[in-house]
Amino acid sequence: MQKGKEFIDSLNRAADDGEKLTVGNWIRNWLENYAKPNVRPRTYEKYSGTLKAYILPVFENVLLNELTAADLQKHLNRLLETGRTDGTGLSSSTVRGTRRYLSMCIDDAVKSGLVFTKAPKLSKKEIAVLSKDEIARLINAAKEIDHQFMSVVMPQIISLTVHTGMRQGEVFGLKWEDVDFEKSCLFTS
Image (cartoon, rainbow, N blue to C red; front, side, top):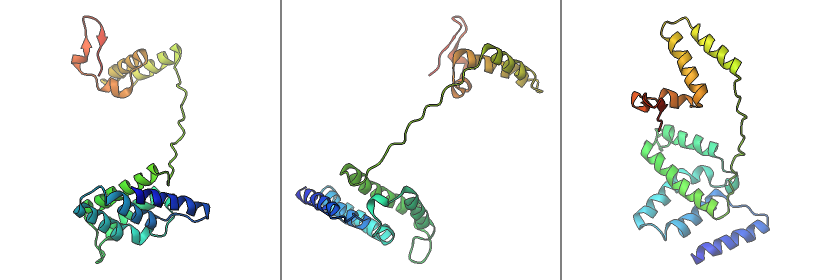
């Protein structure tokens, strides 16, 4: 791991000098210092051959911190369609392997602090609670449905939903064994 530390130190010095790390430089470093010491020789050859054949020709000089998921996805789709030298598509297993090896490489870049990801900001929507009058109007409107079965069932489903707070999937996932008629209660999983 001494080589890895030396490489990280050189990256820090390079950053101070205004130089930027490219995808190609990172992949070669990752193969040598992360993958090679930790996998079998044949596995290393597979990682190396795959990344050098299918990723480096397109992303060699792209700055690592400017690599986007959208660009990678377009490229992987292109490999499926026309990735072979004869212009036909690569097999899905080859493209999946390429994606997997690159994902491991990028994950180590994130863990090393070379690429930063930012979690999206959570936004909570305020829940709109219906008033008693609105619930009554909704149930009455459901009774007016012009369908013999639905005009009976929908008011019951709406009533169950608004009085229990159950979500749609919970209501429609109910089975007879979830109902205890003696105790007048429901069991959901």
